[in-house]
Image 1 (cartoon, helix red, strand yellow):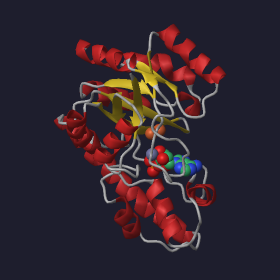
Image 2 (cartoon, protein in one colour):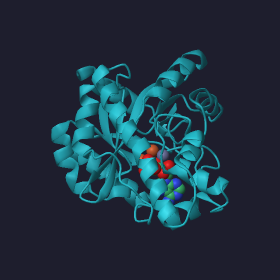
Image 3 (spheres, rainbow, N blue to C red):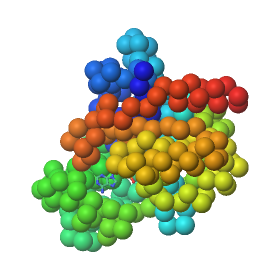
Length: 273
Ligand code: AMP
Ligand code: ZN
Ligand code: FE
Ligand code: FE
């Protein structure tokens, strides 16, 4: 009874609609999925509706992008209340930050002699959570680069010349926002940010889980994060971080199978709140 607890839809920077994701997940033999779009819960609600008909359990989720001391830290929230008014007010602010950021990225690109328009990016995103993958697609469409990899390497990587920061949010704030909206906060792909030392402080704010199973993690890394989970009493979660095929990532739904006890543990944790 495998689950995948990290999936993006086209309501952020994934390729597939929430309804398509439910179908792909079913074909991959998954029994539970979580939609964890960047800074939006819109896709979660739609997948939940589609999941009801298909028999797949859909866990409502979100993934917040935060920054701390020059590192990007992502925080996942599970069983978050998508209708929570305070959550939605914060998300509108963060989403406006994402739009403003696209204008700034486009300005930087123009300074580098690359002519694309913000509207080209918005036309590709067609949602409230535009991001760098949409910029990458616009660059490919304009014939400036030939792949996602090239777009990131040459221009929009974290250290790239056209990189612009997100709406300023600390991981502590993200954990708090998730808690206040009834969700269970989880540290996403900890090896990507390499800031294990912040876990105790995040736990003080309400962190309850850690993403141990993730594409590209070797046995040693998995062992390391399992040990940390055990040490701190954190729920072990995982997922593919699926963004669609041809999204610049090789991974497919079904490549990472998380035991569905993780879903039960997250649910039990939510019920405590
Ligand atoms: P943003 O939310 O705008 O900062 O964009 C972050 C997203 O860009 C990530 O979730 C990935 O989907 C994608 N991304 C980040 N780095 C790369 C890379 N080097 N190659 C391809 N996609 C990337
Ligand atoms: Zn993404
Ligand atoms: Fe992430
Ligand atoms: Fe993600």
